Length: 532
Ligand SMILES: Cc1cc2nc3c(=O)[nH]c(=O)nc-3n(C[C@H](O)[C@H](O)[C@H](O)COP(=O)(O)OP(=O)(O)OC[C@H]3O[C@@H](n4cnc5c(N)ncnc54)[C@H](O)[C@@H]3O)c2cc1C
Image (tube, rainbow, N blue to C red; front, side):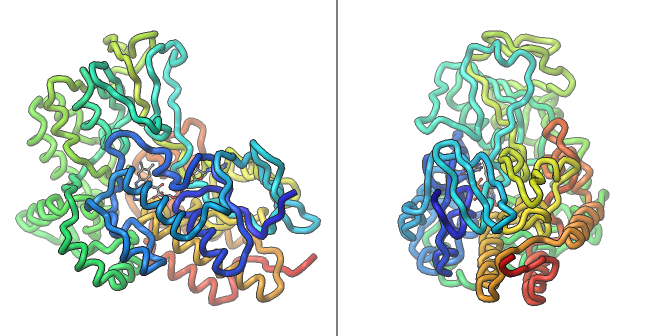
């Protein structure tokens, strides 16, 4: 059986850097990746319009000064092909491919209690033994297929945004239906509408969208940022969201009506996520949040010509930002096109799929192609799909059946020598995730190096420390408006999934500080033991 020091599962931004960092510390490591190439999210999500919504000069690796200086991002927010090109460039530049096994899915990871090794099983070859397993399996890597009545009857083409054909799809002359109105739908709808004969958008919940104002990155701006890259990265590391935009400088309720409107307008003009992170009380005060929400609704009503459609597109029933904010280009404008219609499936639910249509209670909608933009089994889905058995044969799936708990979002009691990059209980999806991946990778590598230097062979989260951390994660979220929405942060989009708020909401900077203190105290909250 192949033997490694470390098996890494997944070759997205987390797994790639994990391999590079471990190699640098003298560990023998191999990545197992289900896809045919590197890039993770950006390998799979090839739908039209896919792009990042954190600025690319921030949403990129910071670990190599040479890399960040030599790479040029053509746009403020890069397209999926550009991000995938970047991932491939990183793989080549750091010679990662020779230690990656592609087209291979990890199906099991079994801990051998006798000698403290993991045996990792795959769908294509014999197992690999390794002292450590690192799950870099992604927070948003398991697409969710909705339970549409009679879906198997549909004879048209069925697509999921997160599993898009590499060769692309030509929608010319076709009637297209899209289910879902989260980020992926909001990015793809304007592009599909330009091609399709007709596009019907089936909306259950309207989401808040802030304009991206995406544009080519001016060469002077690039030069200036590159000159200050070190300082910008430092600013990101010290920030709530792991980004270099200015944050939390103003309190909505402390402003006069005129000041407030001016601030909202300024943030709207700036565009992107900072509409959420600019304001100190937005996620804490329902009153402040409603003022911001109403500002966005006014923008929607001013953009969409048909007042009935505009009203349907106005998000109601959840505070702004409690479902992942969407960053759009021409989303609301698209509903002014003659070939686009909006169906409210909350009040007119889908009752059946037929061979050539999607039927709601009140109407039959003929479609040739159905696009599912229905999101992911977020944060835990990739882990619970692997048969992970820890000490005493306990399975992770059983352990998490009441809700996912992980110490610092990085290690799980009962599963020694296994680590999760950006797991539940870490800031992960509330932060710039490339930076969140980097922080975890560096922290895990330091821990492994520490263990090796002290002759430690077993690292396991202490159950009490894990409980206490989970309590803090839940309590922190409860002090905010986040749990007020049925969001995927809470597992609410997957029927039967326990409702536990998964990301750590106190901020990337606060979290990083805690991780540093824990390391400085000799990895408090972990059992570190030598050879058994
Ligand atoms: C459309 C989209 C847009 C996004 N935009 C942003 C953004 O702008 N900013 C931001 O911060 N974040 C964004 N995200 C979140 C994004 O997932 C992260 O930014 C980042 O790419 C995560 O990297 P990762 O390596 O942790 O996970 P992933 O990129 O998801 O990679 C995980 C890899 O693990 C593999 N894998 C999983 N299970 C197994 C298994 N059992 N066996 C083998 N391989 C396995 C998968 O195939 C995948 O390649 C976006 C997500 C999506 C879906």
